[in-house]
Length: 510
Image (cartoon, rainbow, N blue to C red; front, side, top):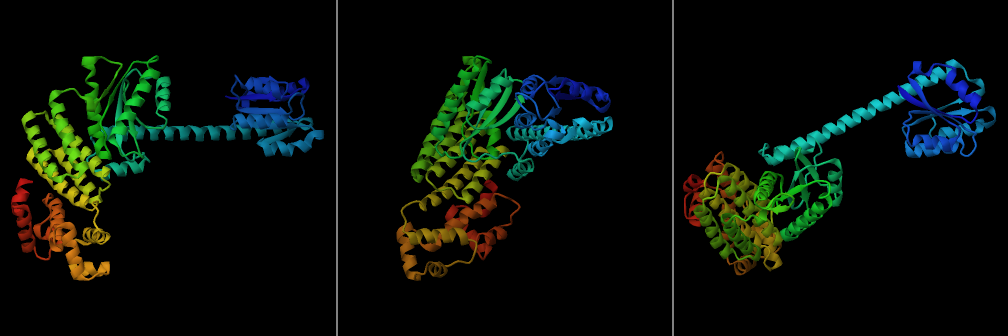
């Protein structure tokens, strides 16, 4: 049954309107009567109404003003104007303000009121149905967001393409820039959740895990400093603990910093590991993964930071040394598989952040980053992961060369090589693209990079080839062709010279 209200200052007309037909037979129940617009607005403060029949000429507040105010407050309420012959000129204004129809009080017949109520009932129910359908769609979409979020943090989706396809299908927001997971454990009610989200200042991605666990995915689209991101996470956590402490007891675990969808699972595990510290220090506190007290992990993290620092500073000779120390430490500490995965993934994140901090992180380096993360999931052996890291570091070191103060001609030459390495390029073609002579380019290239053009080109091609060789489905001659070598035999010869091992040996180790 729908609710109706009659607004009419004349008692005779009010009685006539409500008694001329049985309103209940047409789906309406008259829940209230008002003497004027002011009285009607007061009733609407505590009474839900679907339909209002209002006179136009009334004391204190007329029907025109009432229609305007009601529509401003709730546009879904249907309004029918009751008009006398002498105020019919106001009917047009009432319709313009949102009234659905009008009735002439002096010519009111049961049939006309029945017909109008039938029309209003259909219109109201149709709109209610559409609202319910929209609410169901929104609820279903929200549930699909939650489901995908849980799939991402539990590692149920294996490839980036699969993750991105599912996200696009339901318009799931993919954060850009550094990301981190804040894992909340404790009693969550609606008020504390609203307070939590408002304190964060933006609308983060919220993923309920259970009645007592909720994930908040924070992202920092305009920030590149990991340190600043961590400071912001701790600051927000402190504010949230202070503001929600009076209505619930929360414990917060914070992950380290990630960058892509494939990082979500690792970040969630890190946040869980951080929460585990509460068994020692109690609930109702903030725990961060990077502050994990385990002496075994701490020693590895110190090594990781030294390694990342070497990359950040461009000391690539030190990077090789730190890589050896880092992986030697992993072998001696004998961490669990889960801890190994977390630590090595953290190392990839630090490496990427350091490279980005230098202002050079290409699509090629990103591709290798993803390849390493896939290898971490499969986790073949420490040695194989170490080899992948070393390949990545060489790639980053060559890219870093592009950030050194080379002359513009050489910067352009390096960009040309990176774009055309798979083609049959020569120093003559390079010189032609730069509008310079071949001899000049050759001499300048050697003096700036320390390598002859062909040496630099072959080194770059072999780096690209090593990435392809990780995939056993690629045949050697196909890899050679893909990386610009005309003959597979020449490719194998160059590979052995630069890597100190044959292609076959490299593949066996991989």
